[in-house]
Length: 108
Image (cartoon, rainbow, N blue to C red; front, side):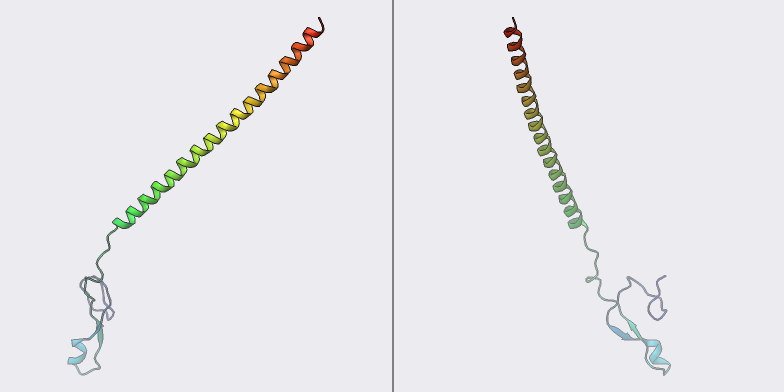
């Protein structure tokens, strides 16, 4: 059981609204006690989680797409670098073979 501000049982959601004099305080001659009347439930309805879920889903898709694009760009860059490296090694080997052949035939 939920207890209100004056240790009185409270029914419904615990919300604060406008102060209302308590009947108990007025009837026995003491100073009127004030209790809080609940605010209308229309103001405190539970918000839908759908926009939050959709937002996180869109964010996840964007992060995934950015990761895929970055991986694709990195792979292309590595491939181009490997091709340049192999082309340079191939040219050097071709020059070495040409030099070796000239030395072989020149010594005959």
